Image (cartoon, rainbow, N blue to C red; front, side, top):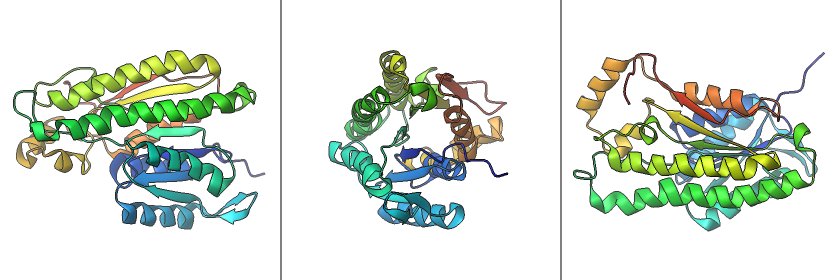
Length: 270
């Protein structure tokens, strides 16, 4: 007898899904039966991923007939219009509201308060803090309405927020980036306390070193950072983070893993 996939009745919205952790999350959740709304700035990347998800995991049945497993909403995840479009896409494409929101989009920045490029501060603050806060606000409002009209114990609802170990243990070498993740830590905990009583789980995931294109985009020195990865290696992969998130969101609705710190075994700091 076949068993239903654990996420077959849920839609996941994933920001920053064009590569790295976001892409790995999309693949993992789709493998568990989820329908996916993909967001990233690079439209061609998420178009390719959407086709891959449908090819690999199949079409999905909706009230409008069979549909591709993933739909794309390209754009800046910190813009209100993009967030609205992501949430609307679930209803428009799949006929149901998304109840699994992953705030993954973010960017790094090499250097401290004293040494980092000040021209990049505002852009990073917008993406890493304001974008997350806006998504929590809009998605949280939708989830509150959704949970008010159904038995929450039978229907999990999740907000998963990507933080960082440097948002818990600051590093002087990336303190501007770390400060944004400290803010994300606070936003996640405050949202958990506010939304949890309504049956909405808010989970903060704080990875340490994950090998992806993140380091290059943040401007980290490849030689020195490569030495750090060698010291702590083997470092984490995007699949490690995605696998942990997949475990969290497939728990019974009454079980809430709030804060998860994930490090390579040999990484002692931060």
